[in-house]
Amino acid sequence: MTIRFDDRVAIVTGAGAGLGRSHALQLANRGAKVVVNDLGASVDGSGASESAAQKVVDEITAAGGEAMAHGADVSNEEQVADLVSRTMDKWGRIDILVNNAGILRDKTFAKMTMADFRKVVDVHLLGTACMTHAVWPIMREAKYGRIVLTSSASGLYGNFGQANYGAAKAAMMGLMNVLHLEGARDDIRVNTLAPTAATRMTEELIPEDALALLKPETITPGLLYLVSEDAPSRVILGAGAGSFAVTKVYETQGVTLVDDDLTPEGVASAFDRISDTEGQEELTQAFHQTGKYAENAAKARGIDLGQSKK
Image (cartoon, one colour):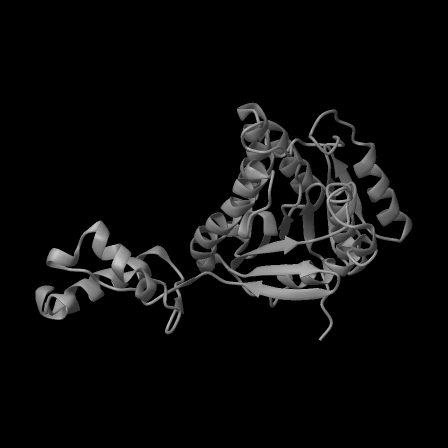
């Protein structure tokens, strides 16, 4: 099976360099018409220029593909609306959205200003939400959409000095989980890419020997699968140096405390059993957890929920 994107239109944000550029080039190489979005800002989000996006467009057109540049700030609703409007005017459809744009303003939490915290969240989280919200009705009407959010190990596992970035990246999981549920009826599949790559955002954070292995091109094959016709949905795909893995959140079976045991001391004394991973399971929506807890509590008290519902 060959994965192709002929007749598909894709928007890739933050596509003027690094991962976004790699994603845009490879989508175009496999037939997609690509909107190359890049604000042209520095790593910390300052400044702006559409030249970076245009250079990628020039690369695509020189190779025989179709592309257009747009310098929207993804956290600016008016600029995002203009990007979407121009895309529809040019090609009449939007099938794929790759939310890749991001900035870094790293400092320890004690030294970080709330302005720097807010700006990083604005670009990563609100920028992703703005872009996705703008294309959502188009995809719903078409009964087709492939959306990728970009997370990070910093969000999934933590990284010193990146409270703002980690918080924004962790939020991608929650956004994906809800959009997966809401988009399923209309064949809108939503996934999250959690890449580790050698880009201008990571070049000072990763040892030089590792940088040579962590090229963006080693990650893009995973992205292309996540936006393909037969893509999964609600997947967090870790990627780097040609390695791919799926991250899932599991919940232990847990322990139900009742009566005199339902105290902080009871939780403390039962914590080893509460933490026991035997029989842990993946929950796929919030009410699965609610139902689990209600059923456990009913069993502990000898209540038949089936009878109580009648």
